[in-house]
Length: 280
Image (cartoon, rainbow, N blue to C red; front, top):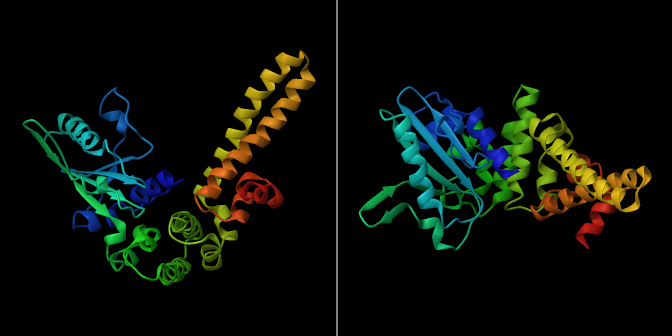
């Protein structure tokens, strides 16, 4: 969820991110990881944006990663080989506060090889700039503040003034998801319009993923049970049970991320009582 949210923000509001990270509102277009090489790239968490003479490489992380310096060097080499004349800005953005010293790593160093990259810890950032640009609004609640509830209230107020209903719904959904990293679900629910989020592309994506996971697990369980019992009824019953298990697993993961139970029920189609059983 956090990967999808951060990718949406950076790709939908590239000029806002360029202003924040590079210092000028240059227009950037999406650069597909597949353009770099045939070797696999962690496309779930990597974001590449480019202009005529600049590439902005972003990595959003909720948790520290000991392999980050080597990975950043690897990506820089691939980018430089493909685009030797472009200036490459690399930034790792950590979302959730941690005491781990891994988030202080800003370079790869081994023997005579040294490679440096930027690191931003959102909990150390001043909240002002995040409330000035639409693309940064959902991240404001993670910044350096003693009152994240007040920040979220201000963000919700700014989002409520957006005239485009789809954009408003998308930003509310992404803010809802990110705020769960630092605030209780009931507080987030009080400040954001959950009903309006149903029109959000991210909400629809979460719902689709929950359904697809349920169907995949249902088919696997149904085939196994059908083979064991040797009849079509067993396969059908297994599929139905598997779909429910897939939804329950999705709901359990969403609860662990702090999402609101009513929101989870809407996404997965589960009853509130079933979700409450997962919390006990």
